[in-house]
Length: 228
Image (cartoon, rainbow, N blue to C red; front, side, top):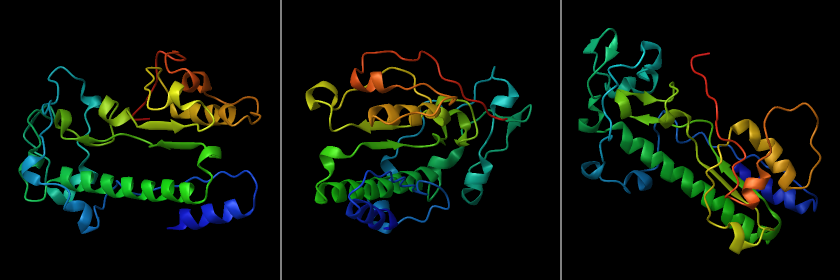
């Protein structure tokens, strides 16, 4: 894995470093090693809790995500006013799309674990800030939608985990913050946590205070826009 060799090289320089490890998965095409597909049983996959698109929602809020599911034939075109008002039958398919998404997520988890193990093996765990996040969420049939092209929470909500090893573990480890966080806040937050100077004129807000004390509310709202 390229990120591992880059990490080893960066450590060998004995200087401060930044490494951005980007993973294409989970993303279609759903080419996933069989060992991660075998972790799941299609018979036990739970259907979406809210499979219908809201009848009173505006049409511009609907996007079926057809680009992601064309090969699965999951779009039910029975509609009213151009909107699918019935559940998308992806969970009844022979190879349901959620199976491949979950499998790809497990593969990504495995790759993250390899990177964290390497950080441990290089003895830099206590001096390396680690951030795990994503650029968007994903619909898996919720509201009769698939993929990411909406402003609903399933598409806009992303994971965010920040590990700052020089903070006392008892004060922050494993805690959850309710402060709203926008991805444009990430640079400013990392810079402050790492004690680095920040250029003027940048958008976003440092949320380092919420990392230090997860009870702090730095923001009470976040904004997303689609389409643009």
